[in-house]
Length: 308
Image (cartoon, rainbow, N blue to C red; front, side, top):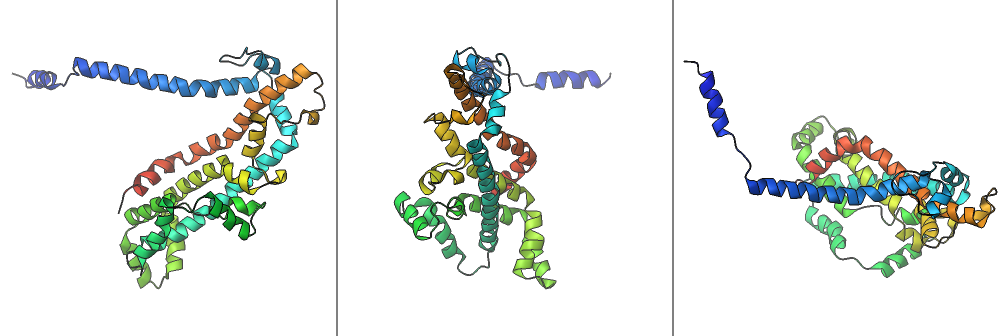
């Protein structure tokens, strides 16, 4: 007698079937998650559709899901408007330079704090971590920035926030769990000092966490507007988020800059459409960058989240 029918019958009897309660739970779970997906996805689709629709259709509320009488006039006017383009260039500067400063400061602090043989490591760690739990408040922070002479300068949005303690903790955990201590011993035997070890060993092996740090810091710099609101008063230094704030909240888009717009109805329609267009343009860089670092994101976060 062949053994295959017996093995097949045993496999069938050993199969685990979901109970009725499990199937009901899975159904409602998927239904709930689908509802959340639609609630999040529809506003995004609407914003994109409104940015490509005719201004009169946006004002009349004709846009429901897909673009109505598609046009690129909103994007054309955005790239012609000097305030928006200046804010876009400022946001790129803050995101690139600020993230570079943040990552350098984070890695310079993470490497020594990850060394178990560092004298006074616990005291230094407390020096970094205590302000994360107990801060002096907004007014002392503002006074420090003012006394340093950083008010109304680009560095007011970069230097006061040069280090995130939370990201520092992730970087420390990554170095401890991902880079063996034997590499340090081997490097020291070859005559490598700490700075050479950091530059030649730590940084090349820390690519995933560095990519994640650039993503975290870059998104934060790109989206932040509160510090710009309290530290800057010159519009030439405003990031794109403050320009968006004037358009979305105060409705202060200067339509006199748009020479070919004459009628009030067209002006109002274009003003409403530009709100959605600016939202798309401001979100586009992050949406482009994220897929490029996604492969490092899971690795960096997973290894950096392990407490050593």
